[in-house]
Image 1 (tube, one colour):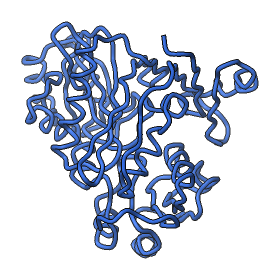
Image 2 (cartoon, helix red, strand yellow):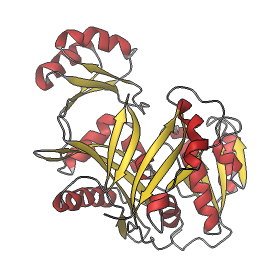
Image 3 (cartoon, rainbow, N blue to C red):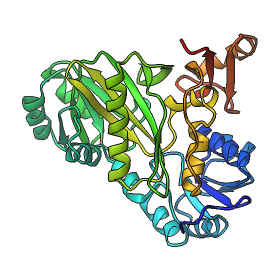
Image 4 (cartoon, one colour):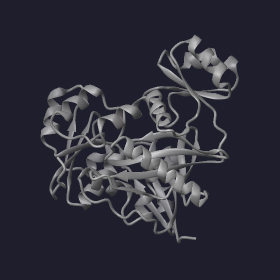
Amino acid sequence: MTDPLPQGAVIGILGGGQLGRMLSVAASRLGFRTHIYEPAASPPAADVAHAVTTAPYEDSAALAAFAAAVDVVTYEFENVPTAALDLIEAARPIRPNRRALAISQDRIAEKDFLTGLGLATAPYAAVNSFADLERAIARIGTPSIMKTTRLGYDGKGQVRLTVPADAPAALTAMHGAPCVLEGFIVFDREISVIAARGLTGEIAAFDPGENVHKDGILRTTTIPARITPSQRSDAVLIAARILNALDYVGVLGVELFVTPLGLIVNEIAPRVHNSGHWTQNGCAVDQFEQHIRAIAGWPLGDGSRLSDVTMENLIGDDILRAPALAREPGAALHLYGKGAPRPGRKMGHVNRVTPIR
């Protein structure tokens, strides 16, 4: 299917969290309907979607009915089981494609893909045993970070090794999961590029944002990032190279370290990205609409930056500040409709908008 989707078409979204919620809102602005597939009851996206299927990813009948009810399928998170994707893809196109999803689901595969493109990454080695870990430490050194190859996000599934003696405890903390040891990168700052590729191969990128993490979770993204024009150009070119190599359709997030020796790719995310939320109030077309345009076969929109923005995630009890934030001049509040706050839970975000300096 290459023809642009008409208004009234149904976009299926795997996952019903805040990203699915914001994708649904963007789709509705373009005249599309969305159908959410989510195992958990009453997800945030259910408040704004046309239809919701509540069923596990192992329910083949529910998956088949979902696929039959939509025109194209996308996803808001990477860890969808392969068997579920096989069943859906037999009936409907999945965008971004399965290759992008498979690479992003496995940190070793992701690093191999990136280095195969000639892009710089942290030094890395697969770890499946204590002997593997000893060899990896001998080659990469410490400090270093050990991560599970699959399923980790927002600081979960990783542990830092400060000295080689930390190895036994680090391996125990991984509970036997396949892992990767990554060398520790000394960087000036971390940035990310949110870029999109359409069905016809056109590419559009938003300005890189500068990210600050705390306890492994993104806290703020500031636009513009404190980088040189050449670093900005290099970052966008890196994203474009990845998009083309994957024959990608949709929005992609690329996280990068800015170092004295150049840009180093940290990881990629085959979806709309937390660090792109600033686009909701800083651009005429935000990352969510851009993703919908791409997967629907529409022309990509103008993502030029119209203002400076600082995006702050509201995590856990930060949501209690919402009434005060709602009165703050220049602040645009985005709440996710979740239940009770708890530590580490993303409850919303606020975009603070100022004129371009």
